[in-house]
Image (cartoon, rainbow, N blue to C red; front, side, top):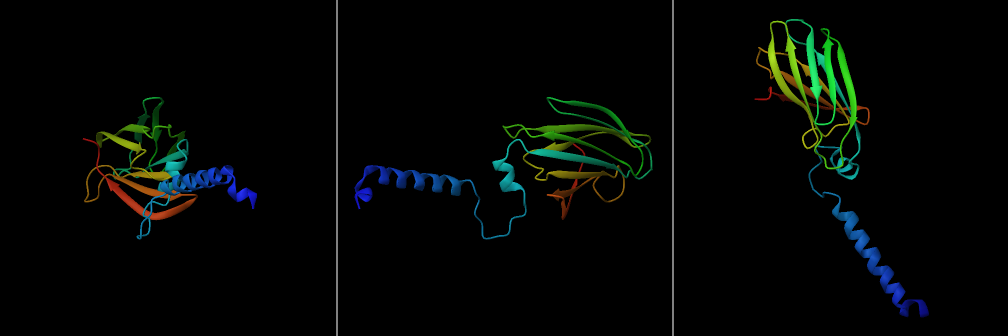
Length: 162
């Protein structure tokens, strides 16, 4: 009974309540099902490792030349044969401002820039990009999202950067 009258008990209760409120404030509550399964975990783990896969499916079956870089890394020029892939891994910085831009060229296809990864846009731990190239009704870049080894079933279509 003496424990309940002690100020340490009340102090412990206050600290527990503050901790509980802080933990709850980290999670986004919604009645709707979350579209982004990685969104909550991404906010809690800022140094999460990401994998980017670029697949060459350009319409004229040519070799795709890709040069990707961020403010910290330059991955050099890569030559991806038709229906082949190239991938790279990196960790997102603690500020959540990691961004990779790639320059795409191919014979008879043009010269294009695309931001292949933006931390605020790409909520996937394994992002697979298919480069279709120019022409047709579809947009030239398709991203298929993967999370924890499983495809999420969502494809997102993007235009080249302006």
